[in-house]
Length: 247
Image 1 (cartoon, one colour):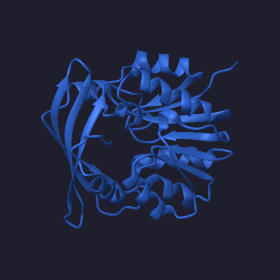
Image 2: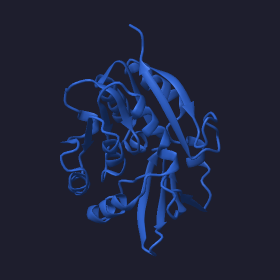
Image 3: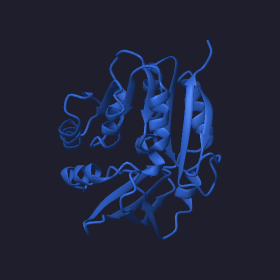
């Protein structure tokens, strides 16, 4: 999960995201990428956490990111193993189609308004090959709405190394913009404590389905944070898989 708080130092956020591990929850993205028969396009690649793991699978990967600090960390991490494109995901230039388009962070929740979210889905669909798939993560709307004042969890690295402890402190719930703000603190095994801000739109199911339809996509499957369970009202994260609708 990521935020866009303007008061945060961009380079500090890039440092945080560069340190985050590939987790057991990321297994889904990697399984989809292994099964994809063609290039993978990752939108909102950040500091390259998932990008590097995709490159390790010897896939053809294009990673898109707009933030200069994140771009620097991304390029440093993947080198020439992936094509790195500096662009806004809602204004993605035309390019070759991808067998799999990944929105592996809460990009939809980060967008300013429904129009921006529609543009993001349209751009993702425009770069998806016939027979390809678009996979995305969305923060659970009811979890955002009813977020407890304080909650604690763990990021479990896929390689079995020690967990990263995450503390979430709820902030303002803005009824006019339907956005939830929160503070996320990450305690790493070496003792480092890094903090991020969440500023997330509450995106309900009907908006998602309308967005898919408008982008020429159809929802294939949805699951909650514990596969293969379906998205639930208490789930903090939903994982959705869509494909181009038949013409």
